[in-house]
Length: 357
Image 1: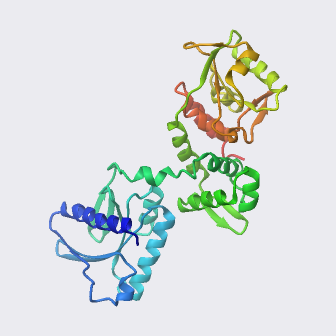
Image 2: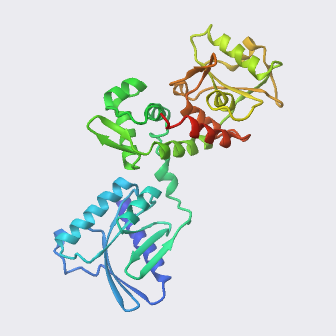
Image 3: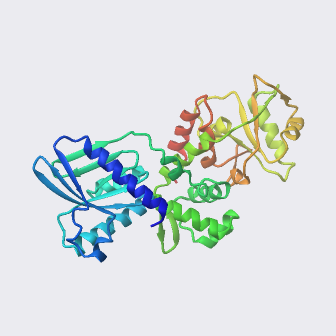
């Protein structure tokens, strides 16, 4: 175990001690099985505890992991079970710890009746009549755990769109790399990250999403926080006429153009009228503005031209009512940025188009 993990393990001991110190009539003895278990077996766990509470005794075997996603916690629990079997300590309670434990990881622990805590002090410790639960404490390690630049980087997002476009299809690494135009190495990294979070699994046919809904909602949160600067213009025409002109212009171009936001959502899942057209354009905004006779404006814009951060936003685009529109997955992401009923439109799209094939 590296120095950083050793430091975190020591911090875990301190945090657990602070949690236990708040409980009346509770005493803790660290490393209580030292000398009772052969050294090669003792190495299977990171710490042991002897807890006395209201004259009841509990022996605990604990394991610390650098990440608290289901895959790592499953490994930790299996290791603790091996320790309990090999040490002949079948009545020991089990506990896992990590800098940050994901909601899926916490649910896994609850399902397996394993206590857990993170380095912020969030915990669920349940053994016999002893029950301690603390939630909602801000965790400074969460940002690092969830950032996953390879998962939500531009190339990673191409892979996610492809997986979510057909969520019941399994993909081998090579075909997925070819489909998305990214390297096999990038596909392998994204595959690993999805499996760690328990959002996908390995099958004989390749990687298969198991929780596409959770993946998309998590991605949407990241997408909504990203810097967003549309180019604002005013059109003298109504929205329908403007969008027809956009469609006609696209027919003269090899570059991509597609509606998004409320304009795109209306064509996939009509719900409420909108006053502003948003369009992705794979070119200079001024070129499109000139072709449509749009006027640049600081206020009162009724058309936003968006420059895509990556060509992947055009993947799986459709032509609806003669107008090119980004795919429903991309629409759902972009609607998170729309303060004018964007959330409502996103949920309507979710209920009518996403994951209903």
